[in-house]
Length: 173
Image 1 (tube, helix red, strand yellow):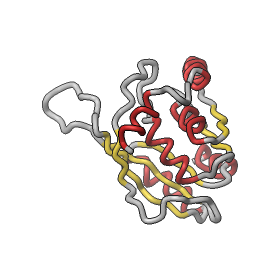
Image 2: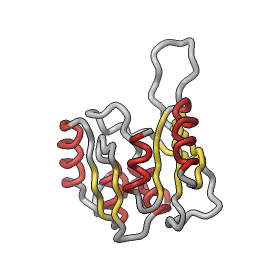
Image 3: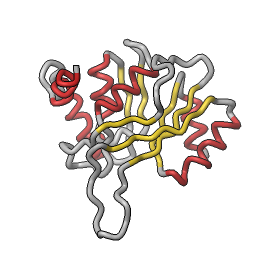
Image 4: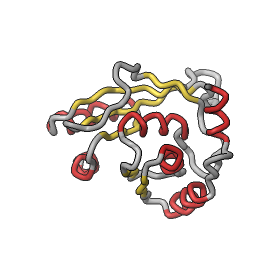
């Protein structure tokens, strides 16, 4: 609860929290008390990681709670809250990297060029890469110093003209 309240305090606009389905009710209750608009969104992983063992459904979705503060930017009116994107397989030093192209879409939906995006769980640095590709400033942190070092390296080494995500976007257009 304290983490959610602190996110609300520092956020200027929208908040996206990727989480397990059982965390949605607790987080939703906190943000409901703060009078925010919310949607439960779903990332459908088009290339999910295989699960060990043949006796359970493949986990191919991840929940995301979208919280919109009053007056926040939102540039994707009337779009589905189910997002289809492949898993980020090139990242080996983080257990749950988010897809750069998904984060780029969410950043562009909830901010304008030149805005600053804050990610308190920077992890693999995908948010920072998506910000750099979208013309946004980025501030990130993480409790794991190794993740921070790897994220800084990935963001600093991004070539905006030649990277796998740009190539993927070019193929889609």
